[in-house]
Length: 140
Image (cartoon, rainbow, N blue to C red; front, top):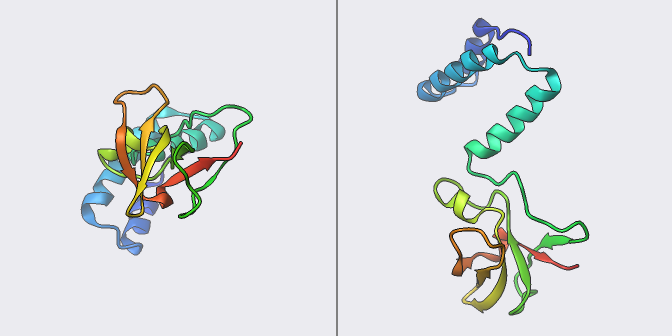
């Protein structure tokens, strides 16, 4: 990774009108980033994975090789269907608990899809309610 040009970074943050708190955090992260001395490929991977994890988004979606997942459409779901929560469905504290989880549909009520987790992860989700737009359905 090439050296960080902090003058340029500050100009960019100012021009983009990044809030002061965010700007300070970015500069602090870049100061540490500069110390790592990663290759370009490793830098790209580290940034992609870090940014997803920092936002509590799943980076590993449990899956079988032949599984096909499609976005869930309201009205096209029935009890017993296997579903997966989108990798980025939730932010904050809910992200690590729900993002990427797999389960079976146990009910559909008032527009919510209610599932019981089947992925063996903790905590077990039993009766978790989701908007259909935050789910994928396994079709194969």
